[in-house]
Amino acid sequence: MKTFSRLVVLLATLSLIGTYFLPLWRIDLWAPQYPEGLVMHIWLNKLSGDVEIINGLNHYIGMAHIKESMFPEFTYMPYLVGFFIAFGLLTVALKNRTLLLLNLSLFVLAGILALYDFWKWGYEYGHNLDPKAPIRVPGMSYQPPILGYKALLNFGAFSIPDWGGWLFLVAGLLVAGAVVYEWFLRGKASLTTKKSVSGPIVSALFLAGVVTQGCRVQPEPIHYGKDACEHCKMTIVDQKFAAEIVTQKGKSFKFDDVACLVNYLTESKVSEADLAFILVDQYNKPGELVDARQAVYVSGDGIRSPMMGNTAAFPDAEAARAARTELAAAKLRTWHDLLHKIR
Image (cartoon, rainbow, N blue to C red; front, side):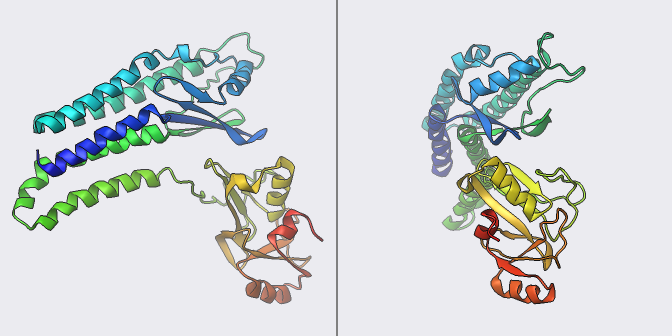
C-alpha cells in the first residue's frame, strides 16, 4: 500500500470513533397534532429522543413498547465498531493490500447485515400487534421504512442515517477509494507527474461531499394536480398561488393559497425559527417559488386565488407595484402584514 492509501484508510478508521458519540440512525414521525414531529435516535448502545411519547401513541394501535432490551445488538455493537477500528489500524500498519480489500468487504457486509437486521426488527414490530388494542384496522400493519418516507395512518414516518451513520458510510467510501487507487490507479500514477495523485483525493472528497449533501434540508417540488393542501386538504392546482414550508427537520408542508399558509402557521403556532424555508409561488412566474419573507404581496378583489385569500406574491416592490395597477388591487403588503393580519 502506498502512503496515500494508508492515510485515507487511517482517516476512515479514526472517523469511526465518532460513532461512539453520535447517533447512528433516526426515525422521524409527523402528524397534524405534532407539526414539528417526534424523533427516535438509535445509537450504538442506546435509544434517545421522544421514545416515551412514541410508545404512548403506539399503544393505541397495539404496537409493543420500544425499549433498549428489544435490541440485543446494543450489547455487541460497540465491540464490533472497536474491531473495525483495530482492523483498520492493522491494515495501515502492515501496508497489506489484501487486508485493505478485506476491510472494504467487511464494510459492505456490515452495511447489508445492518439493513437486514433493521428490516427484520421493523417487520416484527409492525406486524405483531396486540389484538386487544383500542384501535384495530383489519389487515393493517405499521412496519417503519428502512430508508425514506412511509405513511402510517395519519402519521408520516421518515427513516434516515444520523450523523454516526453518515460517518460509517463516508468511512466505507474512503476505504473503497483507497481500493480503487491501489488496484486501478496506482500504476497510471507512476507514469505521470506527482500531481496526478491528487485525482483520487479529489474523488474521495467529492464522494464525501455527495453523501453530506444528501442530508441537507431542501424544499420538495410541488406536484400540481397531485399534492394536497395541508390546511384545507384541497388538491393544489394553481401555480400562481401555491406555497410551501420546510421544517428544520426536513419535513415539507404544501398549500394551495397564501391564506392557507398563513392560517396554518397561525393555528398550529409553528415558530418561524423552526422553519428552514417559507416559500410562495410568484404570481408573474407561475410555479417558481420565492422566499415568502422577502416577497412583496398585492391584495384585492381583482385577484382570485383558490381559497379566496386574494393575495399574490411578487419578488420585489417594483413588480408588485406594476401588478397592483394592472390588477386593480388595493394594497401592498409585507410578510409581516400577512402573518399578523394587518388590514
